[in-house]
Image: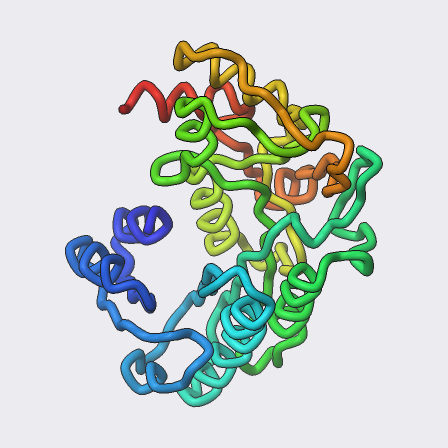
Length: 276
């Protein structure tokens, strides 16, 4: 929705597909041509005819199950390709929004777009497969095919961590594990920068994050202090073997001359909390 707002501000005509009835209303109110449907199905194809310059597949999983991931991400990507093929018109940009969860590293190492993803979880591997479906699509369908791997999104409408800390709920896992984050507005600006990039940008995979590399404990403690509640307790730290890596954002920064407006969690959360 934030990307759509920015595109409308440029005078672009924007269409949207969503399975969420509430989002249908919001999108129509924003001025988008809106279709309700499930991405992995094909009944929406004929409802979005015409020539498109840019196609951004930013679907979220319909459910956290493996089947939900497969339908939304992998089967959804194949459905997008079938729709473009049916329309019979090459698009300039085909973009799939993926996640830094494809990186399984647990040693705090710095990972970039070439880092190994073979140890990703079953859900993470589905994302990798969807990425490959996008990147390996025919040039006849899309001139430039790109994947942006977003780190943890936060900001307006994405404040579960703040709500949990305010309630005084314990935090699960290890406080020393690194969290890679990106503010919603910076995610939108990264997408738009890619859509507007010149022909010298050839597509491929891009990491998008703020590059701060703060730990879960640092973030939780700062938020607790900011909202005036006790420091949260962390439980189950010794059993936490989740991903622990620093995501490198230098490729997207250099290729697109893109920098996050919120380069650290403090400025991003402060902006969100000040608007409440």
